[in-house]
Image 1 (cartoon, rainbow, N blue to C red):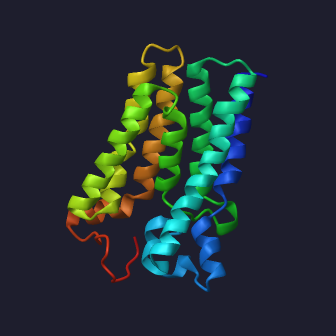
Image 2: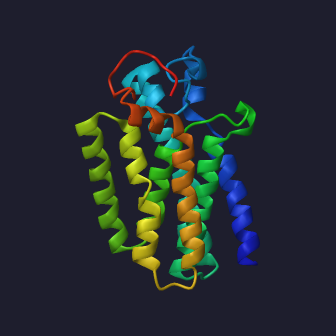
Length: 222
């Protein structure tokens, strides 16, 4: 199959996986409309604030699972079956993951108003970059940086905005000499750009010192 056509198909498949909004469905099941509570976001942070630790954990795991399933199938089943190289495998895994993030951020049945894609992006990071020893090392470093930033600042948004630079950094370090590096960097930077676009309000509040810290109970739109 033509790799470009395959990439488009995988992007679409990833999108529909991403459209399963764990926080929204979990909230509906427990009598909440998460879109009308807390920050109004359907992601992990607002699920934690509106439905407690259990709701936050289930949302986090569900959002990661919907990214793990398609990306790992592409990386471990589809690409080996097609005898693709390591760099092509990585690129197609990234493209599939990008579709999942897009579906999570812009689900069609919620009028394209979804989450911010950080838990989903974390799953894509793990499923794509665990392709090498360097990837495993950087996964550990990335998680450590995220947890340290959140622990010190208590701003989940700040940790998220820092860690999404993982994609272009790892792509360059691991595949800098690949003929596919331009495509890898384009896809990687789209992940980063989407995170910054979805966190535009958070960035503004961080700059003004009004961003709500983890554990604060006062509700406000994020």
